[in-house]
Image (tube, rainbow, N blue to C red; front, side, top):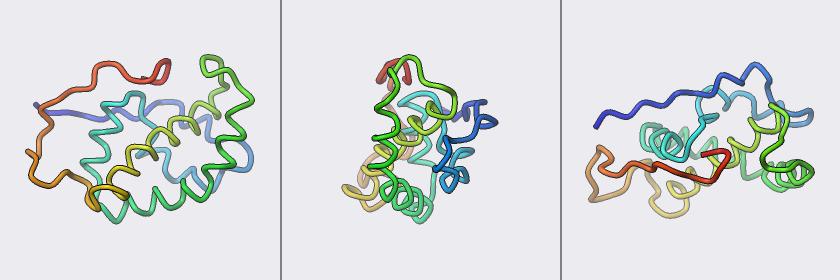
Length: 123
């Protein structure tokens, strides 16, 4: 099964004020669904995952505090971008904290499982 990741076309909206330092991650990590985040994590070299994870972890408390002011189904585009980066950080954390690798040891390279429904409305 060939999986492709389609970055969200909302990158033009950027990130909320105060989070511009994370904008370099939008093209790679701002994807719509849980499955795409999983595929992105598996396809990204481990050093790049660590760089993303470290940058996001440093800003996670501030990001959560900022995002808490919006209903989850009614965020402005920059907040949605930040929220998707936070969701991607969760996927990256599995690689960093559990596997110390972008893939899972002793598992097939291609994903035999497809995540069809994730956390809505952000898949």
